[in-house]
Image 1 (spheres, rainbow, N blue to C red):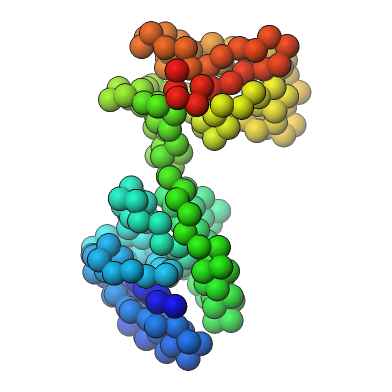
Image 2 (image 1 turned 135 degrees about the vertical axis):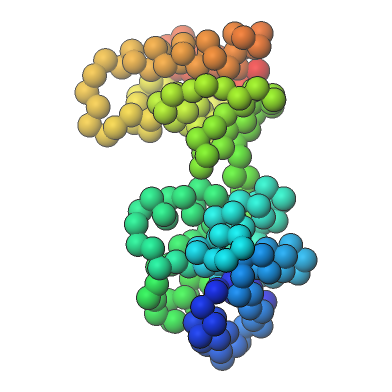
Length: 225
């Protein structure tokens, strides 16, 4: 299996290459983000090991660019950072797995083999329904070419509706996924935020994407309304 290692520390890159070759992988190495992005675009790799902090183009930008261009090669993001928000950002930009330095070579190989078994199905970074789009990582949403001014809670609600587009979702389900686990306020808060969303992404555009099913809940039309 062919692996691309994008790592700017020459000794670590050489060590990764030697170890992976010994385990039967064919390995190419890029020491800058610019070279790594070019190789990932031009060559048919089975998996990419991608450092986060790189000269030229950082790992987040490489990952997002590849996904935006429809390149779905599995990506294992590698970084010295050890914070949950770094992991969240990496996964939100399209990475498939995340490994923090220092790491065990055996764990790295096991993670890579797991990614190879999983393959590379398309998993768009930007969620969409018709001309309604949301970028979860950037926390931005659009109706056509118009960017929508949504609050954090409105973005979270829209993300959940988009991920489950075409499905009927009860207030209980929405509360469980969009509000805190220990939320004990009035369940009618869901109605309030659905109304806010309609006022921003439906009514100004003459659309009706969010349907109310009396006694059941809400549904976002799969075509965006």
